[in-house]
Amino acid sequence: HLDSVADGVTRGSLIYGNATPKWDELVIGAADTILASDGTDFSWTGSPSLSGILTVDTINEFTGAAGVTIEGIKALDSFLEFNEIAAPGAGAANKGRMYSVDRGGLTTLQWVDSGGVLAEVSHPPAVRVTRLAVTGNQPINNATNTALNFDEDIFDTDTMHDTVTNNSRLTATTAGKYQITGNVNWVSNGVGIRQVWFLLNGTTIIALIRDSGHGATTVGQVLTTLYSLAATDYVELFVHQTSTATIDILRNADYSPLFMMHWVAP
Image 1 (cartoon, rainbow, N blue to C red):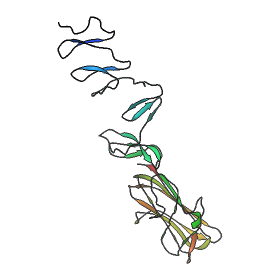
Image 2 (tube, rainbow, N blue to C red):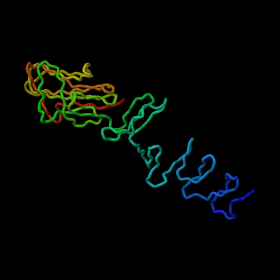
Image 3 (cartoon, rainbow, N blue to C red):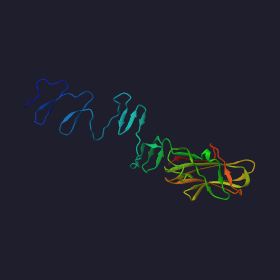
Image 4 (cartoon, rainbow, N blue to C red):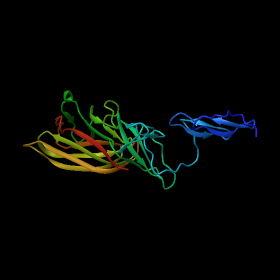
């Protein structure tokens, strides 16, 4: 054959057939490179582009404490690290997806099954609202169904409440089962009844409590329920009293009036 390689070759070199065709020499690559083919020739590379299936038992990090990143998911020692993404939707049949999203400035982990049912692994949506101290007590007219307005967010992790527009509403941004709780404290008055209820989407009562007024002490009422809400469903806290006069729901920053909603499950 016709030999185009010098008599002396470099240690570690490969001898191969080139396009001439003749024998040729490929000098050994730099440390930590691998031999890759483009279908015509081959060369040493530190960043191979591969297609197909790679079957291995163990992948170890190259640089200490750097971890191994695969499509944006980093495996480092005993944990996985996810970049925040937009919700990807349901996967294929018999497959689930775990991913990281932003939840009110917090990075939260979610799981969605093949049917699109979402589960919140961390930081489930929650909102707790009240009235500002400067607003003071809230007068309630006699024999009038009244939705309480809430102008302060103690916290709101899923944009469920607006302190100005429709501020009587807690709106589910994420569909699921919610624990809904309301608390009010009426001024002392012994005439008539005191009634509190949750109204869904302006039409449906989903929980209700009724007590008599008391002349010697205030009347505190706590109402709670577990209810399935679709995204955009909203709940309001309504009250009603029959004292024959306008009376107040007393303001206390810790417990009255308060309105809360907490996502529990898909």
